[in-house]
Length: 276
View 1 (cartoon, rainbow, N blue to C red):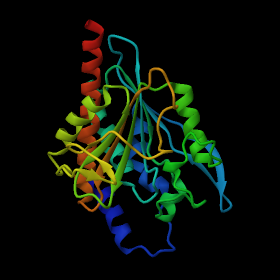
View 2: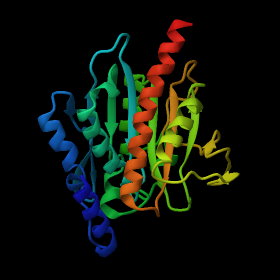
View 3: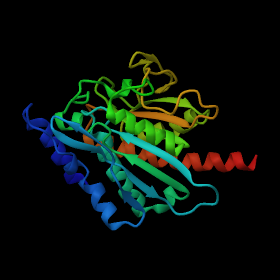
View 4: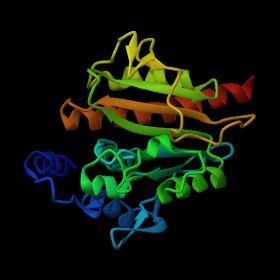
């Protein structure tokens, strides 16, 4: 995994503006795990055309060992902005760690969408090739195919939790957005603490234009990737952000630590709620 990170860092520093990055190269570690593991299913989502080429959204499902109750369905999204591949790299590392420590994902079905903006990733741009910021298009009757396919997934699977991974080139530390279920903030705080083993937290009173407390923001932009608006019982929703100017391998480690912590903490909180 380290060699993949090093190669991507080199590609980003020396590639020309007209050169395109390959999604399949980014996802090679995940594909290799899916080929070997009975717990990982790889099946792309949807199909759309851009600049005369066909695209789909990579999708992986990690099936944890059976737990003591209903299966907990969690969706994890990354690279909604094409110039933020750090989350996709972290998801490869994360799934690899689950293979070594399967007890972390016991009772879970994890739906993993590592590259939600494949054309933006190829072009090294925040926006998709259509020129749209996909993370401002959700639940607005958008015509963007990536958004429509992801909205369908969110609608069909009724996830218990939604986690989105981002990297912020304007932040000097870790932070996150929370919304949805009241448990969200109780998951983000321990996730930030775990990730602080690798990178500092952003303690600013204002982050990304929003009021923040200890790196936690309870407001947010309209149109971001989230669950269906207006649900009576919304899932927990967390957007976890790393400082993009930090070393890539430390961002990957921070993401992995945060994800593992969220899974462990959520299972614990669910167990407590069932015993009340």
